[in-house]
Length: 134
Image 1 (tube, rainbow, N blue to C red):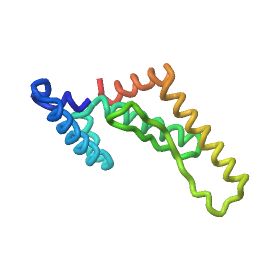
Image 2 (image 1 turned 30 degrees about the vertical axis):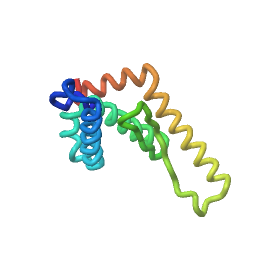
Image 3 (image 1 turned 180 degrees about the vertical axis):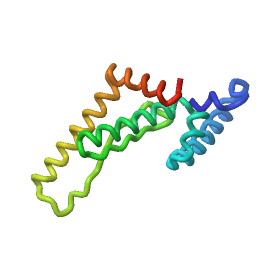
């Protein structure tokens, strides 16, 4: 993904390429937490941002349906991403903890299924179109 943004990429040695990719990734990661940077990131890293914004929105939608706040995490360098959640379990009974864990796992399962199946892909394509990614 980052190689597309580096001028002269194909003329560089491997070590030089990897160093530049790491620099691009550091720049991306430093800007990512501040959502006011997302428009700029969309222009420079469209495929990554489309993926991230779609899954972030999906986590929010599932959270509204289930009452569980989901978070989407992903890695830039390897194909690895997941939804997760957490809650404060102090002061609640064992049974309530188990209910919360079950409810959380159900929400994560729902988000994962929506993201991975064909229906999720179709929703992703529509999301990209509506957000101006295509």
